[in-house]
Image (cartoon, rainbow, N blue to C red):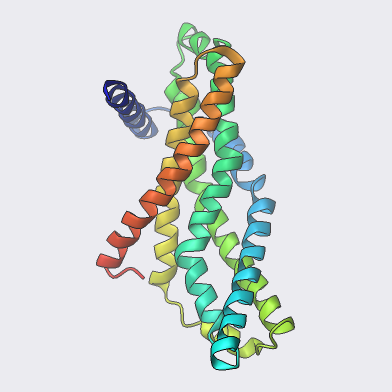
Length: 250
């Protein structure tokens, strides 16, 4: 228990120093843009693929279920759009990005730690928080909401393909149901993506900077980062959904 509170306190201090550095220190924009490419551009094909097939299987399940109950497919577009925009889009995208970008980030920072590159930054008079953490925090805040939008769009299009070709659902009816979504519905998922971005980059950076024990330590830190991030995303999703619903953001 004592170790838990020590780690939690250290993590909070890292978060505080990073946020204050964003507003008080010079930002390394070249590094930030490089991280945006790594997180966003390199994750985009995987996010689109996962989003498309999630939409396809969801449309198939909803269509077949409605056929077995009502003898015809109904509300495929509406059910798919709400599920993707509110939950599946931000949650699945965050989990995918955690496994790809979050793990790579922890491994990169962990390698820098065990090879004493971070100690070298102190020797050269540079602040590791400003040089390493700040660009990654900004990059995640920029990249993840955009990736969520791509996941939503690819899922809706994938569902449309299955609804039309597999179930014979009219395209015009599908899009009519999609258009019933309001701005607040999309803002629900986008707000979640900002919170999930914070969790992923915070956990990834902290586990990277706390890495010990050479190559084996890097592997353990990376595994821990991915597992903890996924658990926090799923747990936070419930409480965040409850909070947003209480404010009428749905």
